[in-house]
Amino acid sequence: MRVHVVNAHLTYPNWSEGVLNRAMAEKAKEYLLDRGHEVTETRVEEHFDPAVEVRRHLDARLVILQTPINWFGAPWIYKRYVDEVFNAGLHSKTFLATDGRTRSDPSRQYGTGGRMHGRGFFTAATWNAPAGIFSNADSVLFEGKSVDDLLLAISTNYKFVGYTILESYGIYDIHHTDVAAGIEDYATHLDKQLAMLDTSRPAADHRS
Image (cartoon, rainbow, N blue to C red):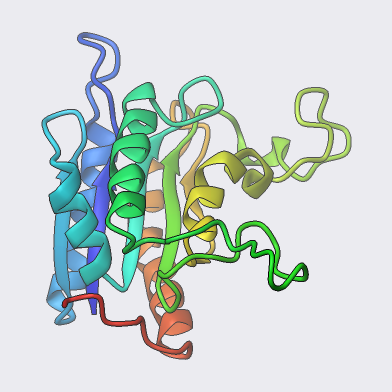
């Protein structure tokens, strides 16, 4: 299986250097390569070419966004990445050609025009927030909302073009938790997501 890892960390010198996100990305790559998968990685902060990223998305069966959660979302450089890459996928009509709606069939819903079916996407994130604050009706901040609720602005881009949204993975409360254990546990999560993709229908071939 081909897997593409998008590392969206943004460096703030002497404050946030990206060590944990790099470690998670490396864990994923090493684990997947050891099991015979093919892996590509883009570090958004360093450089990306939208045309190359479109090709990598088309070639990959699984896309993983590796990101810190800064102010309840991915760093701003990731929004630029999505705008440029997904616009390129729209213009080339490889990710999608329409939003799904058609005058000839009013039952077709907005968001059903994607061409990337058979592929999976999930977010692997690092959080300052503790895990117990999510899906907790007593939480003053999130009022019962889940991690997936908070990640909706990220995952919906992929769902819009046809991806299956898989289970996210997080290392929470990063300044007060066993980070090494969280990295090791990531392998079990990867196995579960790969198994889910293995039971779904294969991705369409866009190599022509």
